[in-house]
Image (cartoon, rainbow, N blue to C red; front, top):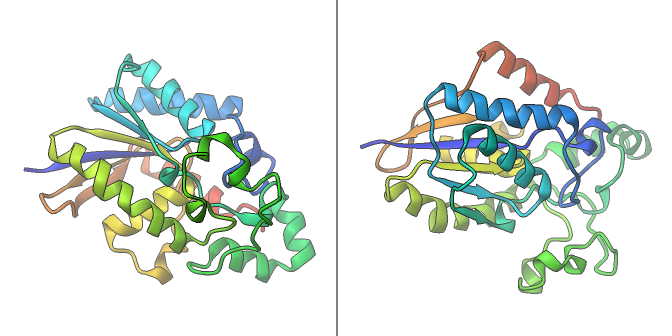
Length: 247
């Protein structure tokens, strides 16, 4: 018996468009992002993919993408599970800064290390900084030691995996088709786990916005196959656009 899983990075956000480090900052979708979300819904319908349960982060750009996609599909009634463990990587003190300007200030090599290394986090936020998640009511019930002041991709893998094992896998075992709508780095973390990608290789993986990534998994939840819906060349071009972001 095989299992299917759909991963979807949220549509283009306003800060994606402005080339800002977003992280856990809550920003909305652009008009293009809304269209990407609806197109994701249309492409899933065209492929005969009918998710049974929705998983999202607690950030609005993921929630809005999921709602727009499911509205197109006529599946807004799906049960919903949300978790901070699916949030984007926390970019620490870089959040809200322009990527190119940050590279000009700190040097392109340093910023590339912060952005793309597997285990080097950016400078952390001070706990009193209003951008720190301890000041956000959606995380009020979490133990303070779980709230990041900064993260590298390795940290995202560590905090995402319990959600995979404890919440998503039981849905798969129950025969459900989960749709996971999250972020570039939380999806990269899950893809790293599923595909067994090395620490060195994962830094080169780019997840395009708004394109459903469909996995077929065996009984051990290892990939049998995976593919982006739609035109493969368009998916490759969209991933390359992510890679070219300044900084």
